Image: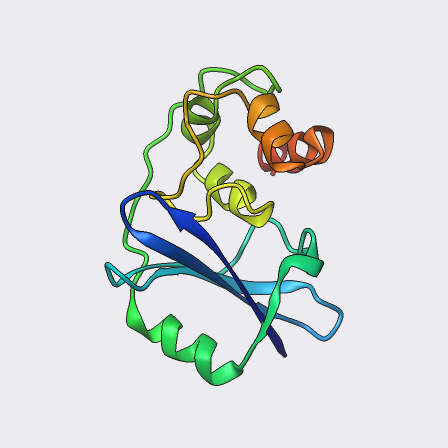
Length: 151
């Protein structure tokens, strides 16, 4: 296995660190988000998105560092979502996307949009606005999000 990490600012909480455990061909096995200032840890044992997006932005991490963070927290949240629409669209808000499917946040995090429930993307912005602001391919993100609805 190989390990990577990256960080992004979280308003009012400092930095959030995302850690990835990957196979040698860089397929994501599991990942987590850690906010050191608050001790929050969100773990994802079976991520929806299995490929690292924009690996040039990641730093190398050690197995020991990943495992230490993994043991620090539990992901106990249950998400109750009622499907109001059948498809993710570029003009829907991030908040609507998060409500549409319980794993939408994981997909956004894999594209370095948000990363945890406390990160700095604005849920009132549209998917198109957020992707434009962060330089993410909108069609690629929508393809991954809509893949959630197929299975």
